[in-house]
Image (cartoon, rainbow, N blue to C red; front, top):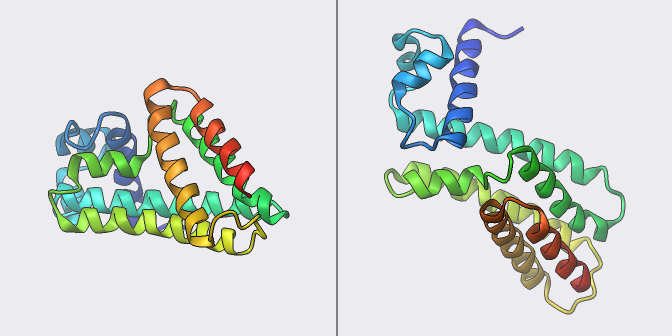
Length: 187
């Protein structure tokens, strides 16, 4: 059973997650978060001293939840090469659920990555964690060795990041599917 403080924190973060992703960090005011969380102003400041602290907690929690789902899905795939392709399927599904709104970490970076080094650091950690996971999958994949493990990792990571960005512009999965097809030829 959750403690009262954790329940309030979760209410605030749930609201911030929805608003920061759909409206953007800069377009979301603290008063809106307070109102839509249905909490007292003091409660928000009891848990997060500043809006930036709230953003950092949002980034951290979003990554933890996202990565837990990601890892669970990928680990259900038995074939090492298919795991690499499942990365693209997972991202395609997540983008469809989010109506091709793009990457929450890139969105946060665009708005606040330069305003506080803690924000940028948290985003970089999230992206590096994903890249490290891809690197481990590449190392265990038995790929064709047309590229080194490092080159294939970088190619997958950059293809995926670019496909998600372009998918958010055209609001369709074809860019992610295209990136997956290219990687399939390399593995």
